[in-house]
Length: 62
Image (tube, rainbow, N blue to C red; front, side, top):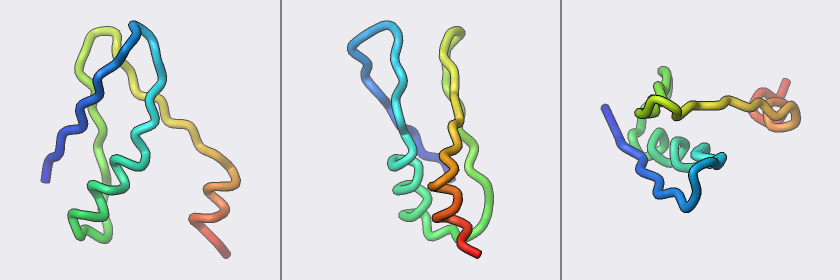
């Protein structure tokens, strides 16, 4: 399965949180286990992953 997220930007630099968009795509897919691959096209584009401790605690309740 492959989906595309397209973001229009108003400035040269910026940070855009696509977490909810990716979560929605995974939920709609019906897939319960697996891996998500995020790719960004462009010579100067990048992907940043930022973990939030409290969010992780929520996800992985003991």
